[in-house]
Amino acid sequence: MSPYTQWITLIWMTLSGAAMGAVFDSYRVLSGRFRFARWTVHILDLLYWILSALFIFYMLYESNRGQLRFYVFLGLVLGVCFYFWLLSVTTQRFVVMLIEIINRFIYILCRIFNVLIIQPLLGIYRLMRALVIGLWRLVILIGRAMIVLLRPFIKLGWWIIRPLVVLIQTKFPKPRWLFRVWNWLQRWWTRT
Image 1 (tube, rainbow, N blue to C red):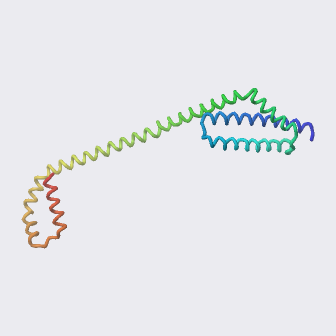
Image 2: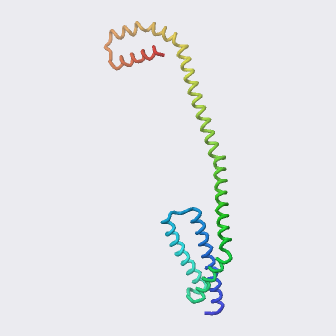
Image 3: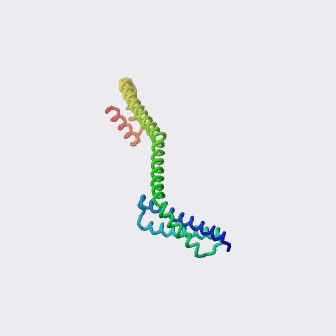
């Protein structure tokens, strides 16, 4: 293997170690911030290490066709140490800032959704409800007024056709259910 390939592999492994440290810090900040359940933390740790191993093997394969040498481990250790020495605090602050920006963005989107969609829909619902209730009350008011206004004419009409009804009741056999309905209507009418 040429020295050029060895140096390229060392550089890639150093960058890969730094990337592993950045992902680990990001994961640590996110798990502390969102307080995952204890059992999920173990699964996420395992997933992190599996993905890190796959990433390292992929980078190793791309840089020197998968040959495992001492400088590969040296590059990983140098990358991780360099990252934790210089970039760890900055990455953690950046992730916290990014979480705050995303939270603020989601809050703004929720407020916009509330103002543009939820509140108008609630306003339309309240308006429709008020209109339906108002119309129903108007119909009831008109119905009661009609009953009061038409009651003398209905009583006059009943006074006129009552002899005919009595004659029909005496001449023809009465179905009992019709008689019950008729009595109920008479009682209801006299109550109103």
